[in-house]
Image (cartoon, chains in turn red, purple):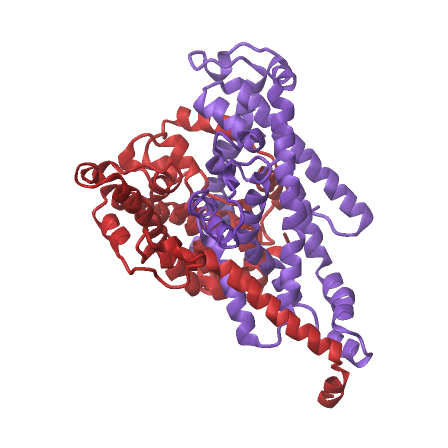
Length: 301
Length: 306
């Protein structure tokens, strides 16, 4: 068998393999390079970053950007707020998604068809930006922590992935025997189903947490109080609106314009690294579950 | 045991009361936060005034829609939206499939795992940071692209200020961010293809390209179809949170899409009824396209969403 297979490997196939490996290597490097550039630039002297066309190692090693971040109140307040919104928001997401996904995974549930339609219809049609905006105003949650936590409590897509996981991975016999032993469905969920669902909970935590940590738009339209701003809004000011931060104003009096613009560049790179670090640290922990989670979701999407 | 018996006697119809109790909170959430705004759509047919509120504001029929269809912004925002989203679809649907096939053909497991993991990473970066990075790279003064151009003694280009280059920057920065993650769903689908199919094909003397064409691609066809239907449903749903961040005065003639226009009129300008009407138009077009594409897929192939 093995010999036959080797014989069948023609020269064309070997060429294919070599070309494929080279192409994948190039694509991977291209995908990686922008991130590598930012990390290297964050450790570089802003004046020297562009001396070489492609930055591969730090030019004129420099920690100015990181020093500025550590003394920047806005970034730390934003970081704190983002942690609060992400933790609370993700908890709400996990609880609500489980509460919807678990009953829908059970054969015994009556009215499953209409319920599923009730949930999935919102994936394809929504009230739109302005009605949602007016609703949140009416509910009086604008400019509070709650507007960052409650809206977006369930993503239907994630709920379907989770439901499919429950259907496929939890043996029905387990549920039936627990039920006969007198356990309620809530006890069943908490004591038996959830402990068996670590992979899907990991994937959900990552998906939701990432969405919460990375979002800026809701904060931009619903929050006007600066002390509530999440990190992404502060980053938007630094990276996109190119603002000099309020409490770096001492720079204006002590330094020349040239130094100011350089410091502005330095803080940009460092703030990207600092804001993305938490994600990249958590990423490998859940990465191994991605394929499984996505696959399950796609089976009965 | 007695407890369960009492419960059964009290609720003879519902053997599993907790399944319904669990659903109460999610259902309330969807009623308020998803169906509530759907009711709010009525203001598209009204002249909404914050003083009078949603219920008491006077009806104006289709006036808001007519105003939009007759304004200069209608064609401009529609064409801009179609340009950016169709370009994204044309590039964004096939590239992850191709990359997934390339990953699938890698023999070295370690190399495969490393390149896949790296390719997923851009997906985890926030849109603010991605646009910030786009600005670094495209800066007319000292961006990486221009440094490279001047290294080869070519003229510097103001990428973000050019109406002809903006769509490319938007689409290809999206490819950078999404192509790796987009392979995941296909990789998962390919992991279900039985290996003996490939072995049999090799024995029959099939080339690599033939096995890809006749085994790999047909096996993941349902996934491709479903993914494409969903993507087509967003034909007027260009990534407006990203476009909003990428807009500047110079690229606005091509970057003002329907949803950024809605945002500016509604949230910034407080013209609630008019912007709701435009948003509704956008939603309806998306919904109709989704259903149409789904029907076509059902007729042509045998895969569809429902």
